[in-house]
Image 1 (tube, rainbow, N blue to C red):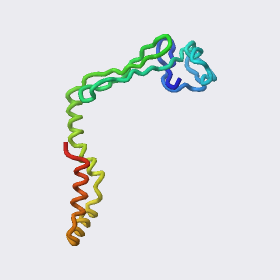
Image 2: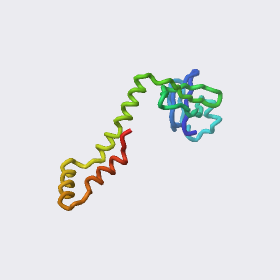
Image 3: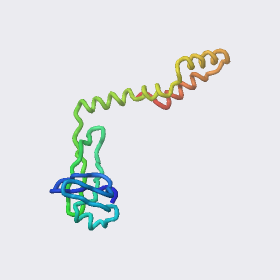
Image 4: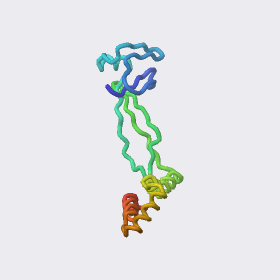
Length: 142
């Protein structure tokens, strides 16, 4: 078991990897990593089955998850809700300006670009124009 849940009094009190030793409220266990799955289940240590979410991220958002405790496992299901208009508008704004940030990261300092332009003029080349065109092609405006 890689991801487990510890269930006490009908509630999940721990989620994560199986620890070697565990002390929590009424439970004090050692050597858990050597225990069999059946003995762990008897102690309330259950494997987690994660149900992958299926949703359209442009219109919906994951908003937490719920646990369904069964006899031999805990099923984790993601809570999905429609995005608010503010969230949709924010996504649109981020997407519309994302290319600007990507371009800024790729550009060398202005002083170096001016030097490129100077040497292009002297040598009758297009190195600077090709450089800028390459960045604009990699990160186009939406």
